[in-house]
Each structure stands twice: as structure tokens, then as C-alpha cells.
Image (cartoon, rainbow, N blue to C red; front, side, top):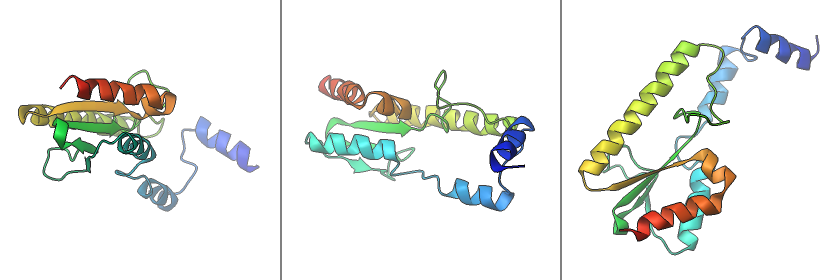
Length: 151
């Protein structure tokens, strides 16, 4: 059986193509901060003269981007990890589906709690999705700037 047929076989049988050690290694390389979508957005904001803090520990949820001057925080959410509905980047895995569903629902619940906590402290909270940045970075940036301008 060649490699491609093996992959098709594993997919059909809902099996992982890697052993537990290799899967653990792959998953450990997924970053929680300084992700590519975050970096794209941060570079664009910086080039426009906006200064910010990143992952500020003093705020609930450690927002990805904090604009203190505008009392605004931006969370850059990965579509898979935060369960972005109706998005091509979000699909529940076919293995351990219940575990993944619970994990993603916990992430969504935590997002909601952190947003409420920040709003109670007087912060404007924005969420930018990975797919929005990939699809149209300029439009995404314009939405952020419009929100900031309203303050």
C-alpha cells in the first residue's frame, strides 16, 4: 500500500495517520501567540502609526493586541480553535469528535467570559477572525480603524 492509499484508508477508517508521539509533536508546534494572522495585523497597525502592547497579562484573557490610548483590545482568533461558525477553516475532526466539541465549546465560553470582564473594566473589545485576515486584510484593518475612530 503506497502512502497516498494509506492516508485515504486512515481517513476512511477515521484513524490518525501518525502515532501518538508524532501527533503530540505536531500539536506542540501550534502557537498560542505570535501567530501569522496576529503578525500581519500588528505590522499593518504599526505601519499606520498605532502603538500597542501584546498579550498584556494585566488584562483578562491576555488580549493579542492592546491599544491603551484607545482603551481597545483585539483578539485574533483562529477559526478552528475558537469554532468559527460557517467558516471553511473550521471543521470538527472525525476522530474524538466529542472531546473536540467540548474543547472548542470551552474555548467559546472562555472567550465570552473574557469579553464580558474586559467590557466591565471599560475596554472596547474586538474579535478578528483568522479567515477575515486571510480573505481581505485591508477590509479587516479598515473595520478596526473605523471602530477606533468612533471613540
